[in-house]
Image (cartoon, rainbow, N blue to C red; front, side, top):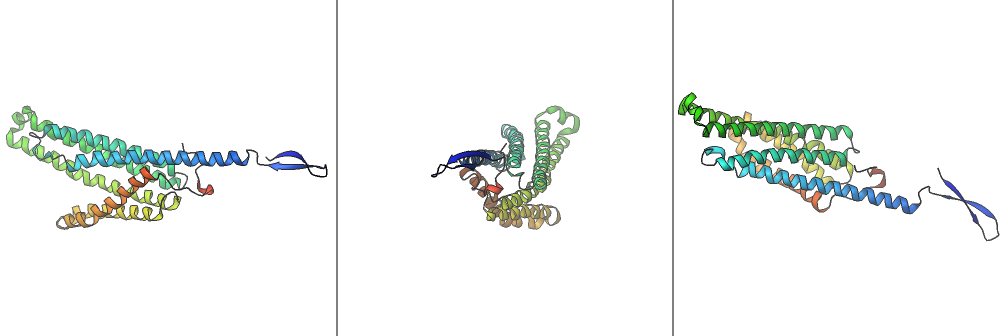
Length: 259
């Protein structure tokens, strides 16, 4: 409700003066504080997203579970890296949900659910990898199943972990679609960034389908579609979150509260 104040004109006449209840300075300060909070949230999401890339890249790119006995220490590190990857992945989604839920709450919820499913599958895969290590180094399994049987069990567990990662990729790809939509609609990010995120999500799904339906083409699709799309989209998102945070949105699109 406006506050009426009395002012004296040059003729000595007293007239009411209508002022913003908070004052224009207070409104500007509130908007500045809201934008600053949004930038902090975005940069926090960027830090979490960076950790996802670090731990996920280490677990998938540097850990070779093919010889779990000679690389047992590295395999253990890979299992922990998978669990940290899943933890930070959920943290990214929760932070971005807080930041973007005002744009479209259903899309933000879908993004959060897809990431939770991906993290669950990823964590379960880590269990299979750890069990393969235990079977390989625990002589009681060789005693029970024989050396050949024990080795076969290790291979089965590692194959389960490998193809379970493809299952998780369903959700790794799908979560980029609502994220890209939210980034596009929010005006807090470049529209082009939202588009490439959606394209990257589609490429991940294409890679998954190729792995199960046409495995002879999966390598080529992965090299020429998934890797470029994933690098461009996700690295761009991480860099934008860390360096810029969010663009200055229009007042009508600013979130009422960042947390």
